[in-house]
Structures are given as structure tokens and as C-alpha cells.
Image 1 (cartoon, each protein chain N blue to C red):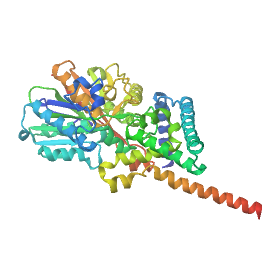
Image 2 (cartoon, rainbow over the protein chains, first blue to last red):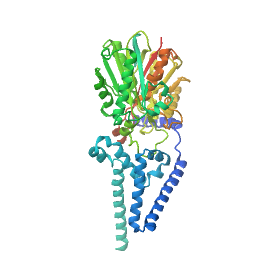
Image 3 (cartoon, chains in turn brown, purple):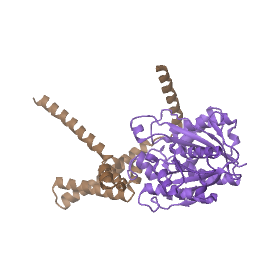
Image 4 (cartoon, rainbow over the protein chains, first blue to last red):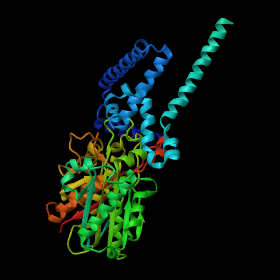
Length: 158
Length: 331
């Protein structure tokens, strides 16, 4: 049984080696550079908006940053609805996936996709199909990190 | 039957075939061979699912019309698609009103339905059968991957599901391309789990079927004017060629892939086309016409299918694949 399994693993590895020759190489460096510049560009827009709302319109700092996030989310949803965001995302990769744009797009695209199944089971039931995972594990990670922080402070301070 | 290959009688032939496509397909190199194209992914319907169904119905209606037969002459409608519970095929059958059998072989459904249709005709259960398949880029993405407007980056090994449908009337006749051999595929996998790399996953199944076909029939690659795989595209097809070479078969220039015969190189389709419609639009739109005219004397269509589901790959299982081969001949 184990030798059979080992043989299978060996066969799979041999096949993977052969297949790998014909697979296009992932463009890691180009993708990193694109992600760096596009992500950075989105942050510049965010920073400019933040300054506009804060210094320009005189909103308090926390209100201004909420308005900045809301503006970026609205722009992303519009680009998703017009069908151009997925093309930008394919080009920019992590550059658009990591900022709040990626989160907004995952919700807007799922809502659009499932609209034909109705507003309750379709849009409502599927909007967080992709984003739900980010929320669940984001909240959980925050819990773990804050637990560690609390324990560290207790052990040092106590 | 010889091994895994069935031989049909000389009067089992394709009477007519038809192919339809969506907007990208009409702009691609296959465009001029399509009987009907839709310049909108919705095809005038309110959902993509209905659009796909309309494309299948159009292909079926056109094929019947071209065959000169009446719906009442046709004993059975065999169809398949990629959607859960085969809804495109069965809903289209409701409208058509021909006795129906739904089939599923993922993207190998084109040649699976042709094999079964030819078998029924050859056995005398029916004089004529209509076979058809469809796929739609948006319905397939929605079911297998992410929402179509989701901006996640896909790797270059990914493929582009073809939007379209193909259908053929097979029956007892004296003229038209003969359906000679069908080699039935075995389900197999070589450890590929990545649903964005279907070409690598499916290549071994195609190779296995092609080798069996040569062994069973005593033919060799040069006996065919064209051997096409269904949707291995630019990653899977060279893998298949290399595996066949290792097995002693030099496939030569006439070995190609339907997924590479649909779009222009400047259309962004990653490694190439995939889906049930990939082999169907090329075979039923272009190749069958060329066999009928005698431009191609003998062709072998090896439709490849990845038999995964979103659940199976999320549970970490390998992607099992299959390939069915059918030869069409002008004699």
C-alpha cells in the first residue's frame, strides 16, 4: 500500500516536472512592481482625499478618514458596475486587491453576479461570499493579536 | 468493438452541423465559420443562463434546418452543458419537444454526445439523432470560479470559457462526413489540483485516449489530416505532444487544439479557449464543413473534459479528467 502510494507520488512529481516546462513563468517581479505602484497610487489618492476633507472642508480627522474610505469604495463600485474594474485588477494584481478597493469589488461583483437570483437569496445571500472570509478571519486575527498584546502587557506590567 | 474503440457502420453519418458564438467568438478567427453570432453576452435575454440556452437552441434549430429533416423525424436529442443539473440542455429540450437524454462529461460532452448519438443510430434505435452542447463564459465563471466582475488576478495558465454552442444531426445517410470510430475515455488524474490550470490536468487523459485509438485501430498520426484536442490550450497541448512523443507517436503539424483555433492572439484569453463550446464550435462550425467538402479527408476530434466541481477542488481533491475521441471521414 505504502509503496503504491510512493509510486503514485513519484509519478505525479515526474508529471509536474514535465508540465512545468510548458507553463508560462509567473511574472513575479513585474507583478510586484505593478502592485507597488498601483497600490501606492491608490494610497496617494486616499491621502489627497483625506487632506481635502480634513484641511479643505475642515472635518475632524476621524470623519475625514471615513469619508475617504467611502469615496474610494464608491469609485470602486462604479468601476465594477461599468465592467472595467476586473480588467484593472487583472493588470494590477495585489495593487488593487489589497487596499479597500479589493474588498469593495469583491462585494459589488458578487452582488451584481447574483442579482438575477433575487434580492434576498441572490444579492443578500451572496454579497459576502468572498468578503465574508475577510471579515471572519480579519476579526479573528484581531482577537488573537489583541489577546497576545493583553497578555504581554499583563505579564510585563503585573 | 476493438479495445476501447467502437466502429460504426458506413451509413452512420453527420447530416448537418451548426455552431453559434458570442461577441468575442464572432471577432475571433472562428467568427467567419459560425452560423449565427450574438453581439451581446445576454443574447437579448435577462440572464446569462437564458442566453446560453438561447445559443444552444439556436444551434440545434439551425442544424435541424440545414439537415433538411423535420423535428418529428428525429428520435432523440442528446445534450450537455456545464451548469449544475445540466439546466441548459434540459430546459432547451423542453422547448424543442424531441425525446431527450441529458449527458454530462464536462467539456468532453461534445464527443460524448456524438458517440452516444452515433451508437443509437448505428444500432437502429433511431433513424436520426441530434446532439449538442453549450457553454457560456459568464455562467461558467459564476459556477466554477469567482463573480465575472471580480478583479482577482488570474495566472497565465488559466483559460477562457468559450461562449457558444454547437449541434449536429447524425443519422443513416449515404452522404456527409462518416462517423467511423469512437474511442471512449477513461477517467484519470496526475496530481493537478489547480482549477486555473486545466490544460495540465487534462493532457494525460487526452494522451491516453489518443494512444488507445492508435492501438485499437492500427492507425498512426499521419493517417489523419487533422487531430484536434478539445481545450488543452497553449499549456496542455504541448504537454500532450511531448507525452505522445515519449510514447512513440510523433504527432506532426496536423496535431492542434480547438482552444487555440477560436480567438485572435490579441484577444486576452490567457492560455486559450475552454468549455464544451470550445471543441463544438470548431468541430461543428469549421471542421465538419471541411470534411464534407473533402478539404479534410479524415479528422480525429479528442474532446477533453475536467470532471471537477467547486466542492471537490475546495476539499483539496485532484482534478479527474477524461477525453473521448471520434473520427469523422470523407469517403
